[in-house]
Length: 434
Image 1 (cartoon, one colour):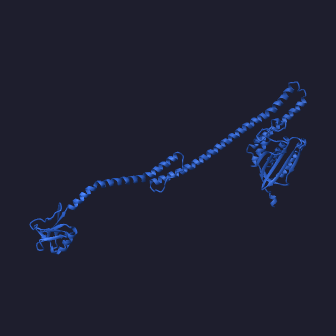
Image 2: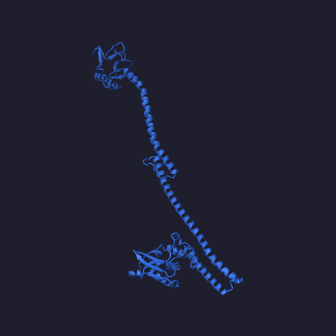
């Protein structure tokens, strides 16, 4: 078709010889040109009876017969193309193509077709597997992470490098995991705190029950005694004729009951939410004042006192409460020490901490009893019974006051007796800086 278009630019066939030669070399095909009557005009007899169409092929033309390849190699096909020269003359270009090469190529293709199909099938399987792995791998990972989340394990994280819907789902799953992990941790912390609070409340409730049970027991005994005295005197029971003596005994029982009731009222206030006013006081002066209040008790038991107290030593305390704690410790030390023993008191300041010590000699407390000394109505020695005149609440009140001041405190045995100690932070008064 391209040759036919080129020949429209020429007036006769002879002028197209170069194009025809080039066509023969390029296509390696047998061709000829017929006029309108069907006669072959190219190649013609004037040139030769034989025409070399190609380097390796010689063709002989017969004017009365169609052009035939003298040595056909296989089935051929002939196509005809109309040509109109520049001068208007029409011709027909016939091109005869040998199909042997095509047949050989087709035969080769048919022989290798099963192998090609097999390779294509295997390649398709490989591509399908790779594509499936690429698509399902993040889905499998998401499924694994979601299963861990269902088991309340939020340690796994999804790969968020993808930007498609699976990547968005992975990011959302990571955010959900982080939120659930935080919420679960907060819930566990709250549960632990709630459990601690419940246990603490239960312990406090148990302590209240035990306290009021002990208080009832402590009040029951003097009430029974008092009731017996009054009933004996009213009914004229033998032995109760001396009303004055039993009235005095009854007064003593009432005094003890009054003292116990006051201690109970103080404890109830200490367990409440009463407002405390903390201020800077001279703790050394507080000790000296309380020592003066127990002088009569010391003389009564013929005990001596050794005090090592500085002139001034300041700390921030609730003065009334601290005075009561020190008084209870002093009275307790004097009551539970034998007559003629020594009471040692020391107060010092070391590295910003005030340490107070009160030691009563001549007595020891069993190691098993020391942890219970600050419990309400606890008595380490049953032989003491109630002859000391105590209510069993002295050290319990001391414990409450020390806890109120966030102070360190304790009781321990020494080589000579029993030592009570406490520690408070020291505070420099403002007057010293003026």
